[in-house]
Image (cartoon, rainbow, N blue to C red):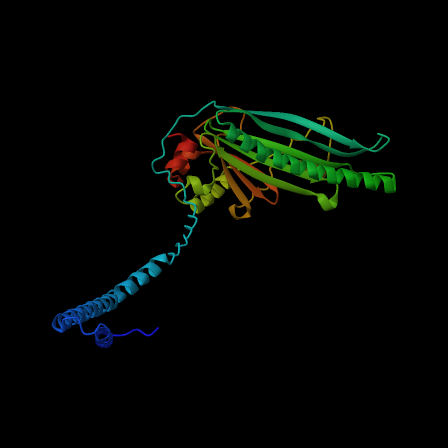
Length: 356
């Protein structure tokens, strides 16, 4: 159905009214009818204008508010986008710092640990128990008491590891001796593995010298030397780097000190020839036992160690230390006055070695 606009609608109504008037035999007052039609037309015109104005206002309002809605939508869309979570970068692992002993607190520590040594020995025979094939003997060491059991266990683990290494060497040479005996029916020289642990202490620190030697099987013959020194208060390894302001200078000084006051371990036994045995001068010269061993030079020493306390059975002593040097698998040692080397020691070294 087609919609009629205002003026056309008025004209249509006027035509209808006139037709109705003629049909009513002209009994209506035409002046009043004209006024009514005029008022009706005005009413339709006013209604149309108001409708047009409302339509215009609505359009203007929509046009005015449209940018605002667009802005709002943009804000919503922007805020709806999730912000990426920053990836945390792990901090680098800090490098180990050297221990600063400048503020080291001196503590008198004596008689807080106990070391026990014992001799042991075992042998391997042929299947018929008539022929000795190999021997394993020496000294074992264990720290039985300590104020800090973690330090005690650490020392014992190192000592036990060295003993296990010597025990493994014994198992190898014993097996080779068994094989040789089964093949040849004889064995010229039984194999032998000897283990030795020596320790020194000044009441504060404990040092252990470990040596094992293999003989009898040419391919296996060797001497192995190791050394460990512990601060029994802190568990710190005692090395030249931890006790000295000049580690290389201290090593050189100890090498010279060892050479100057060297004693060889073990000392050769003197001759036990019977007094009534007469020998010619030439025979005496040939058979004269060597009472002094060759003293190596400072440069001959492959390794040098310092152990707090004397290498004797007299117990702790803060005035002395023991120097161990190794040259060609031979161990040399000497007891020194540690105060003579005090210029090389830092505060920690002075505390742990001298106790001052």
